[in-house]
Amino acid sequence: MIAGQTVQGFVHINQSVPFPATDLTIGLYGTESTYCQKHETRNKRTVIRDKYGMKEIIHLVFPIQHMDGMAQPGQYTFPFALTIPDWLPASMVLAGQIEKGRLSITYSIQAQFTPANPDDWSAPGSNRSSYCGSRVIFVYRPTLQIPTKDLSFSLVSEVGGFMGISATKCVSEIIFEKNEYYLGEQAKVKIICDNSACDKDVKSFKFKLHRYYRGDTSETWVSTSASMYLSRRKETGCKAFEKVERDFLIDIPVFD
Image 1 (cartoon, one colour):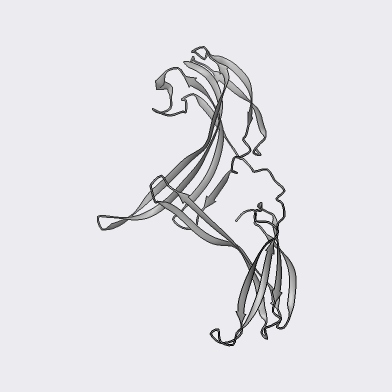
Image 2 (cartoon, helix red, strand yellow; image 1 turned 90 degrees about the vertical axis):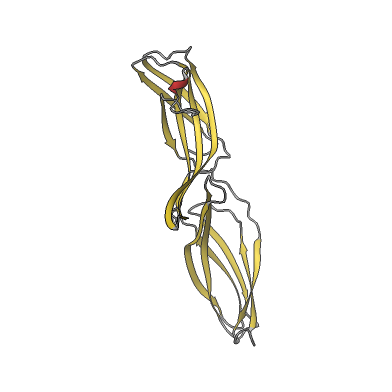
């Protein structure tokens, strides 16, 4: 499902006994969740504790049919149409490399009878009926055309010499077209390397795609985070007393 689209479907009910209910509803639910393991010291012993965190992203519920206090036995089919808001973040699951961290964004569509009796909720204070059905959906962000920009920065490197003594400076300008990319896209990078004042070669240009993540738990100041390289690439550099201008395409992986 793409954020901004309308989901259409049917709720099929095959009911054998009456159920006290006021309404039949359809809802879109979304949560972001964090899990990790932390080492804690208790009574001079180190133990591993599971830590969890959950935050609601969306909770939209719409009525489909009024039940007049009782859902009667029988077979029923009710159509529905539900628009997925265009601001929703995409579904994702990330398994971290430390602390067994796991971060996720999940969505589901849930149909349920609204109980007329308080005891027919799945748990006290819950918004989930004991008579319900749900299906997990995957939400994707729509592909947008990101305006190109001249995003550049300069890098000054000392080439040659010994411990910074008698070293000459090489000035490079790195230019990106934009700072937002989709999975599977290619990032265009231009490098203008001015090594004309140096008598030593710039051996290579190295590209490293870096990712950082952080997930907060329900406990204050307890979170899991890590950083890692998703890909590395090495290209021929610039010879001494030369100035070069080169374009490169860096692949953004679809899965890591």
